Image (cartoon, rainbow, N blue to C red; front, top):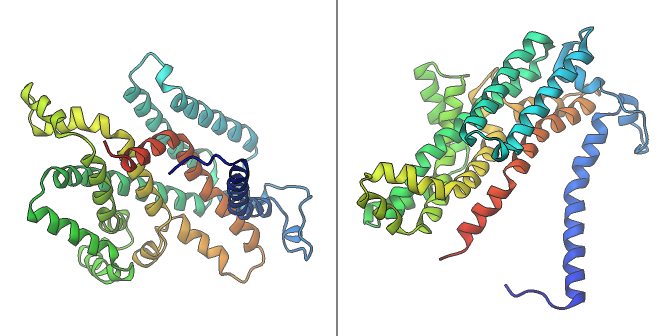
Length: 334
């Protein structure tokens, strides 16, 4: 695409982009304002943009009861979160291998999530949040592991079997969500896995796997075969060359594919709703507040939507550079 040289054309493009950004951001801004309103302000006939904010909606959503030392606990949790996020952001400046820093941060997040219910009396919504993390992380790890091996194999092998697998994966991806419900519900009933994280992860992996295979294959196609061939000449076998040579080059593509898989698993509603009765994820939990007749559900639904959006926004912002690199690498040949 040629660069726009006309000043008027640039102005029109920027105006269109600003308008689209505002159009996309205003609903989330209004939901955020609703989450800090009292029930009276939220149900006012005249929309209120100036009001006295309250944390009651978030307290009711996340906590059964507020402890006496709630402020101290909140500051401690916030401090730990800030420290862990800073470690992630400045990992390359720490005189330790990045893998060690990332492992420490992951263990820190796990310890924090495990310790919060021991410090405060959390509500059911916190359990749904933990379910979402388990299902999302499990789906991404399994999908990317299988997709990387399958995508690399299909990128290097060009026989009829590879074409058949790719077409079958594409057809499998085209199936509607409802097509997966009955067979996996039967599998869950036969194996007593209904209402478990394992069944949901297996189902979401099956749904998202064709996407990861096709996307990762496109990234692997851009990597010259001579790289792993040179590694194999130096003594590596095929798997060692794949892990030590190809994967480091492929990180932007793997991360961008993982982010798309994360979004698909994080926002899944139908499969989780039908395959679980109690171990719901956040999209299913939010639906409890959007269809009720209780007027309190208006502000609770807004608080739940904001609470579910913030973690995914932080993940996308943190991996933004890798996402852009991955998409650019997959879009440019040579």
